[in-house]
Image 1 (tube, rainbow, N blue to C red):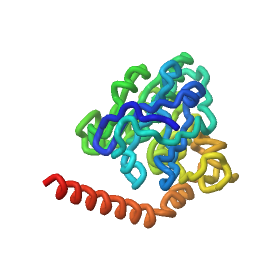
Image 2: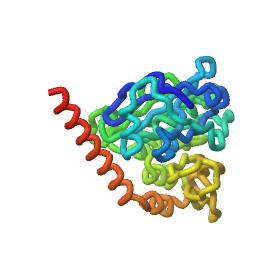
Image 3: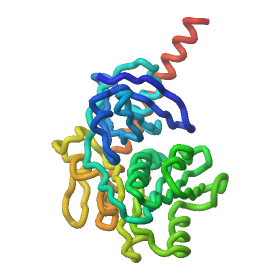
Length: 286
């Protein structure tokens, strides 16, 4: 079992967890993730490792509360024990390419942290383009600045950086300086598709980290299958990173919506039960 040592809110619906799990912290490499289980009646969900400290035996998880399990995790106090399995997935391939552009949107900024760090340590010039709907949702800015040589910010509403999407900033960067040597894009599937469509005509190697539905994380269930270059791949063992120009993003987005109705119902029941417990506690203490 692993222990939640620290929990803090870093943005609306975003929390940072420092989790003590020495065996994972020792082996973690950029691009890898863990599967967590809050309790024996819960569901297993994949979470990308945003950082690790082998000496302290801890990993850092950035969690956006969008479903029943992530919302339930947000209610756990520090000191709670949870099950953590990992590190899983194929680590990011890192070498000295030259100029590497890291494009992150929303929760996708978190998995870029260890990648940007590894790229910079390998001698690359790291340009990070981060975006969100509002300034508050462009998370981990200080951390990414420490791991990058240049920063570009965008927001949908223009409240921070330039108004627009990360793809607008990437297009301008390519027009002004020419194509970079490699691009890493992590965020919503529609964003990664847009990044791939933008870099494809330039022949720029582009890597996407896919966020498919996942159950066991070991390749046994087949739930996380995606089509890459016309072949079926499993995100948990073959990925999570793939050549973005070869990914069938339309199929990925269709599969991501497979259980939307069930997910919404689970969240509704959880919120309803939580409200009932809160009401009962208030009546007892009144």
